[in-house]
Length: 151
Image (cartoon, rainbow, N blue to C red):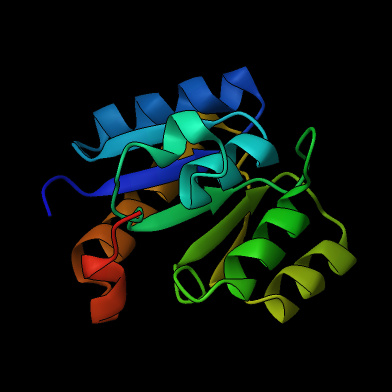
């Protein structure tokens, strides 16, 4: 299958830069694919545009999903991921600045595997990414269908 990929769905450029830095500093050599909005995320996962549909890909190991996104919200992206057979067991980690209890509850009701409030301090953010990376990339076992699934 090759290199393990992580899909980051995030529209804030500062958070994207911080995530890239966290991957570097934590020696996470996995490919980090960035989707800047919900529409790009769905295009990557489902190949809904002809330009992406032509390139067969494996599913990412997991998705890091912000909730407040342009075009299509993170909640809608999560609903779509859980509604499709090929992605219904794909791990989704919600990483958001939202402090709204309703967002937390809805994320779990829709099948999020984890809900993390973005740490404000860069060093805490980097430490959180280290823990995410170690758990989801090194220790977590995915169903066989996820490991073999190509787009």
